[in-house]
Image 1: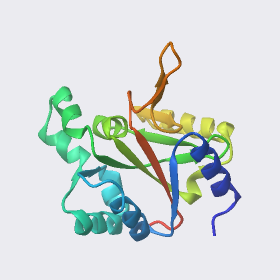
Image 2 (image 1 turned 90 degrees about the vertical axis):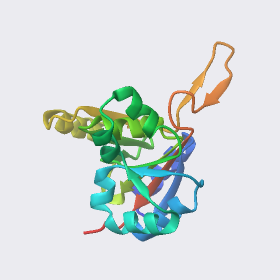
Image 3 (image 1 turned 135 degrees about the vertical axis):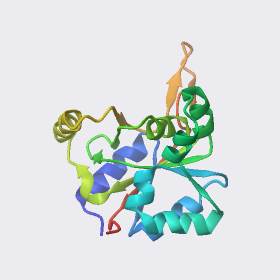
Length: 190
């Protein structure tokens, strides 16, 4: 049963335009992802390694699942790497969620996961329920730890990409994912 931090996080994340689901485990998370838009799925090596049951289930449900870092190893040119990672569905793991804003903290040392989080049409973020922090003060402490640990790419993401022009016309997905789907995983693989 989700606790108060999970419920508060979900409320604010939905208010910012994110889709939020709660999954009991990696298998349930894979079912949610597989039930989404058809097309290529690309995940980070961290997702593949930390959630092997999810990775296997995605592979069995829809065919091969690309791994961002493996694509990067084959494509040293940054522009070509960006093209290779753009579109379809990208799956990443959040370091934390912030209950008072519905934001997720993404942190990686590699360019490929960072590009995947920004260039996928549908960005699916796996958020361990135990990693939801109560407020931005707690998130600031985590950000300081990540900085001291040398994380090169850190983002605080709230909802899908959105922008409005001078005439106040709101457009979703111009400078990032059109859809942000957060799956709160209550029990992680071990």
